[in-house]
Amino acid sequence: MQQTYEGSHQRYGVIVDTNVMVPARDGIELATDIFYPAGGDRKADGRYPAILERTPYDKATARQVTKGKFFARRGYVVAIQDVRGRFKSEGEWYAFAKEAPDGYDAVEWIARQPWSDGQVGTMGDSYAGSDQSALATLNPPHLSTMVVAVGASNYHHSSMRQNGALEQRFMVYAFRMAVTSKEASADPGLKAALLRTFPDDIPQILDQLPLKEGATVLRRLPSYERWAIDILTHGDYDDYWKQRGYSPSEYYTEHADVPTLYLGGWYDSYARNTCESYVALSKMKSAPQRLLMGPWTHGQYEVTFSGDVDFGPGAHIDYNDLKLAWFDHYMKGMHTEVADWSPVRIFTMGTGDGKPNDDRRVNRGGYWRDEPDWPPPETSFTPYYLVGDGSLSTRMPAAGTRPSTSFTFDPKNPVPTMGGGISAADTVLRPGAFDQRGRPDFLGCTNTLPLNSRADVLTFQTPPLVEDVEVTGPVEMRLWASSSAVDTDFTAKLIDVYPPSSDYPEGLAINITDSIVRARYRNGYEKPELMTPGEPYELVFELYPTSTVFKSGHRIRIDISSSNWPRFDVNPNTGGPLGRDQSYQLAHQTVYHDTDCPSHIVLPIQEGRGDESAASG
Image: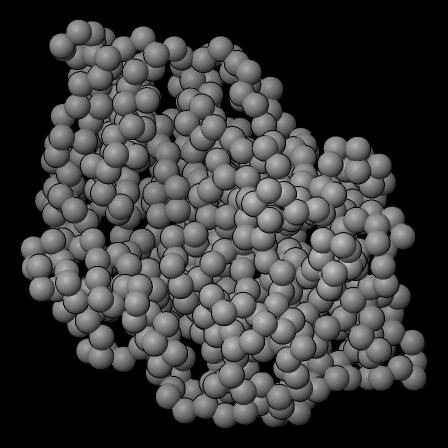
């Protein structure tokens, strides 16, 4: 994706004021570095549009300084702020939840300054993407536009928790962030203890869950420990999760109506959130809302590979140039490439030749395309049925076929995580697309066999495809299942099976998307309902969205199990309090696939695009 527009030129020098203390409404002061356009050795005269980024990752890093100077040289005042309780800002840090009022106050403070022309745009990724959406729910009068990269729409439904299960990278995140806490900076002994814990002790901590209060080094950082335990134990969607910082989607009617770019990746942990924000707000707001989805892992927009696969040089974007094009158009009125964008720009994966490149990554390939909406209007949502002989078919299982398949789920021996939409910042979990077989450098793997060789993984796959099949859009699993337990989990993973070749004699099984469902939340997140052992239930849950081509000769495969560890916490199967129950029991699971209980995955098929995608690979 190339930028070919005439935007703001580098015409200014830069002057920086560091640690400007911006007051929040409760009197806490938030440290902010401000980058000004300069002429010679003084600030340039006049008023300028401003860009705000609020980060927990240290505003003074070389990356942030480079970013601030980039935009200041092109005629913007840039304010990069440490969020409350982090680095030079006052107050106590409690991740994500309290960012809305602080962000509102920062926007309005900027707008009142003599160097401001009254326009304030925001930018940032991950936490700094989510805190934009939080402040936007309070509708600051001077908020002008946003670039929300890999940020949240609802942390309970599809981020910190996924369909009821905890995404454990966030609990790991508490340890990671503790290393750079203000407390650690002030206490060398604490810093040393934290550095011993993260990352070296994290596998053992994950293996000994649930996390106990006072049992780890986090006891010396009470707000960090409290947050980690809170997200582990708050399973129900209650007032805790409905805070603006966790659930911007609860406040979309109050959300600012400003031009917004939602930027995400198919292997990013916020893929669902990014698409959900665009879908909801593009229908509710009059200002332009845009969606841009690439093939990336978390925040890796300028990297062309993901795990075992590479998408080619076209997958790369120049992130600062992209944001400059956006801000130039919406805050300076310039005709940049943004003016000609379709509402949705996506990267469709899978059109490469499947051969290894010089880095021994699979050439998965792909191409960019424009769409008028998400999902594309001509999408054919097609059920692919699980069949008793292990096949996956667009036809309903015939009468007389095997009606169900059973397996035993042992919480003490969970299926290991092999890639997926995980934060790239984790040293414990590795994100992206991988051949689905064990490897010694992945936590939880005890051998190098294919994951579906395990007795607790069920596989259903199509015959080799006779023509290309494109899957672009949201993916939904409708699984009929029962259990001997009163509560348990089920997982679903969509896989592209490559045929054997001289380069890959056993073929490849590349993960495309996946998710999990906690059965107690099958009828809604607000009120859990335990199961009756042995009774079949339909469990409906979303996987991550995607855009990919399954090429002719490949197979479409679904793997069903009950765990994906350490990505998600393991259900103890007892029905006890989440995050507190220390007992476990085996669960005997049954998956149904007959005419009365037709388990199936609903794939968003794009008809008639095979020739186009093949030509673009």
